[in-house]
Every structure is written in structure tokens, then in C-alpha cells.
Length: 218
Image (cartoon, rainbow, N blue to C red; front, top):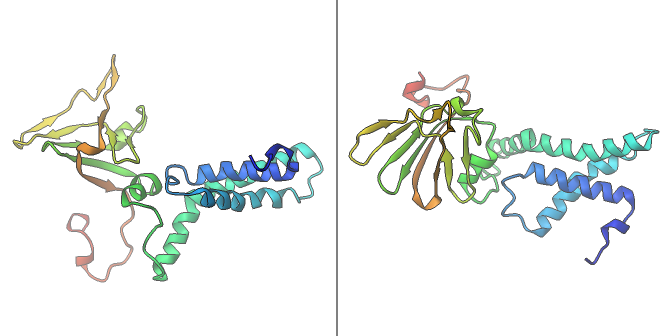
């Protein structure tokens, strides 16, 4: 290493260490397209919170250090939970950009857009079958529940219904067994043809006409 981090001043170590941890939390699942420069400058940006906290008039060194280490982490959580959403909303409403700077819409839906819970999932397979989870909320307490999305496009979900290529419907009544536990289905990315996801969210308070509201929501 060109720089021995352990020989840096303690304040810089706190800033870099907590800043990097904040970066990992803030961009969990959506940082695979970041390069080294992205990671470094985001780490420094979060680390500013630790540097600022170290200047507070807290007499006890332990509590000052602990507070300084935790501050960037709290900032990272806040940025992931609220800051990203607010910043994108401002950019969209200002007609600056409608893109979210992520490499694919799949990542936006499954890794970043967690403020809109998914209530139903339907997966069309390459072999002609359709696998459906009618209510993901029933599996919120199950292992890996209520579902699991892979960054490569793979999916693991609890299948409650299945439609076969001949259009016959099958209800899966063995998703949970009192003795054997939960049954989760893994679907590799190369077997997924299409995914339909139903999201929970608010309807607009006011609409210019009834045509702006989906028929089932009226």
C-alpha cells in the first residue's frame, strides 16, 4: 500500500473508517457499477460528518470518538432511506433528469426502490410456465422473505400459484409445512422471461381526469 493507514492520525482513521462503512450501508446492493474513484470520494463525503463531530465540545474522549464514528453511519442510513428519494424527486420535478444513475431498471426496482413494498410477484419462465406469489406479506417472516432478488436477474420467491403452458392452474398448498418448514423456489436469471411486480403506494390526491387513474383503482 502506498499509504499505511494505521500510521495516519487517529482522527483521519476514524473519518475514513466510519465513512467507508457509511458508504457500504448507503449503497448496499447498488454499488457494483462504482469504480475506485466513486468509492473513495463517497467515503470522504460521509467521513466529513465524523471530522465535524470530532470538533464538538465533548470532554470525554471515548464518547467523542464513539459519536464521531457513528455519525457518518447515521448519515449513510438517512441518505439511503430519504436523501436519494428526495434528490431524485427534485431532479425529476425540475426536468433535469428522469434517470436514477443506476445501470438497470431491475436494480432500481429490487435493490434501491425499497420504499415501495412489493405485494405480488409474477414470473414468466422461458418454458412457458408462470409462477406467482399472490401475497408476499404472508412470507415476511419466512427465511429470505418475503422474496429475494439477485443482481444478476435471478429470483427466489414463495410460489403460491402456477399456470402451466396448457393454461391449467395449480395452487401450491405446500409452501409451508409445520414439520418441514418453508418452500422457496429459486429461478435462475436465464430462465426468467418477464417479471411483473405489484407495488404498494399512494394514489395521487388529485387527478385532472378519471382517465389518469387505472380502472381497478377507481
